[in-house]
Every structure is written in C-alpha cells, then in structure tokens.
Image 1 (tube, rainbow, N blue to C red):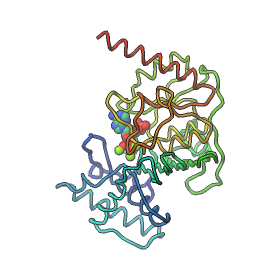
Image 2 (image 1 turned 90 degrees about the horizontal axis):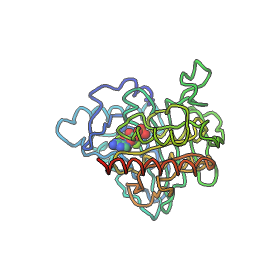
Image 3 (image 1 turned 90 degrees about the vertical axis):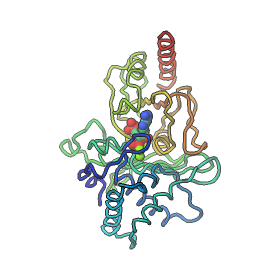
Image 4 (image 1 turned 60 degrees about the vertical axis):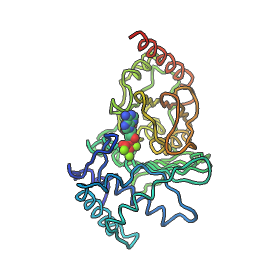
Length: 332
Ligand SMILES: Nc1ncnc2c1ncn2[C@@H]1O[C@H](COP(=O)(O)O)[C@@H](OP(=O)(O)O)[C@H]1O
Ligand SMILES: [Mg+2]
Ligand SMILES: [Mg+2]
Ligand SMILES: [Mg+2]
C-alpha cells in the first residue's frame, strides 16, 4: 500500500504513544519492517541496522489490535508490490522490527533508518520523510530521503499540481558524488545544489513545525541578528534538509530544549544530502556531526546548516544569541 494512502487512512487506533511520549503509528512500524526486509534481501554480506522503532510497546497488553493492523498492512503491501512472495505472522512482525537494534559505532558498515521521520507531521497530514543512510567506519557515505508530500521542484509551489509541480521528492547522495532529486515514480535524477545567497537579508530559514522540537524564540533571535527578513519556514522532518539542499531556502536551524539527545537516524540521510549539495552541517560550536558514537549524536547545543558563504556569519549569530540567552537565564 502506498505511504500516502496509509497517511490519508490513519485512524486513532493506529497511533500509540512511546515511553518518551512521542507518537508512533502502524506506518512507522510497517515502514521499518518493509525497508529492512528489502535491505536484507538485496544487500550481501554482514547486516547491521540501526533503526528507530522496536517491539517493546507492541508486546504489552492492549497492543493486540495495533499489532494486527501492522501485520495486515505489511502483508497487504507485500502482495500489492509483488517483489517478495512472503508473509509475516504477528510473532514474525515483532522479531522483524527488532532487526533494527544495532548500536552502530565507529567500525564496520551500518544502515541507519528512520522509517517515518516527522511522525507528528505524518499524523497531521503534513510533511514527513523516510530516511535511510549507510555508515562506513563511522562516516555517512550514502543517504536517501523520500519525501512523499514535498513538491518535486520547490517548496514555493505548495499546491504542487495546480502550479504544475508534482508532489513527492526522492533525494539521494553518495559521498564525493553529489546529491540528486527525482520523483517517487522514477523521473530522471537531477543534480541539486544549495543556494548561493551570500547576504542574510535575502535568506530564509527552515525550522521544526513543532516548538517542542526546537526553540522558536532562540531561532528568531538568531534570524534577527543576521538581518533575515523572511518569516521562518516551519515544516516537519528531514524534508527540511532536502529542501535546503536544492536551494528552496538558505538556512536550517534546530535547537532542541535542554536535556534532549539527538539520534543518528534523524540527521544521517539529511546531512549527507546537504553536504553533497555543497552545504555545511555543524553543531552550534561549528563542529561536524559525529555519527560514529552509537545511536545518539552527542553535540554542542544545536544543529545548523547553510551554504559556505553564510556559515561564518550564521555561526557568529548563533553563538551570540546563545550567550545572550544563557546570560538572561542566569539573571533569573
Ligand atoms: N523533545 C524533542 N526535542 C527535539 N527533537 C525531538 C523531540 N522529541 C522528538 N524529537 C525528534 O524530532 C524528530 C522530528 O523532527 P522535526 O521537528 O524536524 O520534524 C522526531 O523524529 P520522529 O518523528 O522520527 O520520531 C524525533 O526524533
Ligand atoms: Mg519517533
Ligand atoms: Mg525522526
Ligand atoms: Mg521516526
């Protein structure tokens, strides 16, 4: 079944809350099973997958209905697609989800999967992404970002078809080979690159739709320091990295509230798409993201991305705004 159809038909019974209170749906689990199945069938050699979801919630009392929904969804999708003639039992579904429990790390090859990134956007009917990356010796070497609700050419065509733009974009990047975008039904890939804006007055910036995921007050003070005139473009998921990589906007800012630890599957695919499109992705101290430390990304304060021209002034604005915020907090 197509992801867009699952999104349109999602019902309350298909949405659960995880231990950290974040939502997870039949589609997150179903996508994790189907992508990991395809990887296992197609990739030879040792297999290691670091994926977001696990079966813990589904093994609890009261989860029988959602487990049945996932099993039906996965089996129907396998029949519709026809690539693999197999079906899953409920127990098989639980163990397939747990194929994603690898810890990753600095040695060997590890696939990194966010089966639905931006689950809150998915449930709201907005943007989301399926994000897959490959780590080799701790470095991201490949990234694929499927954004089923993103206009194919530019976010400035929000109504897609009415403006002649198709909906659905698949970004991909390979280390040292550049980044590309194509339609989800396989139009010829087009090379993409970040915008070449060098005056922040002409820049626009992306951030999370959810203020719980990124501090909108801090980003607005950074934008003010830079002289950015345009209002923030708030969209869910790593679709932000894809949109930045093809120049729909100039800057991506992400500043989670204190205590939150970023996970590698939320940034691996998106960051290589941006860097291979000529952009830079760092933490608030200007350091590259380190994907070699396991399931978490340990970094300084936040994540910022932009082109090479704007990065020095962006970094300064970020550091000044953080200093001011910390100073104000120390006076309370
Ligand atoms: N309190 C929090 N602060 C920052 N990020 C959070 C968060 N709670 C969840 N997230 C992460 O933010 C991701 C979505 O980012 P965005 O805001 O850019 O759409 C979520 O991915 P999932 O939807 O895959 O769980 C989740 O990993
Ligand atoms: Mg999640
Ligand atoms: Mg995510
Ligand atoms: Mg997710």
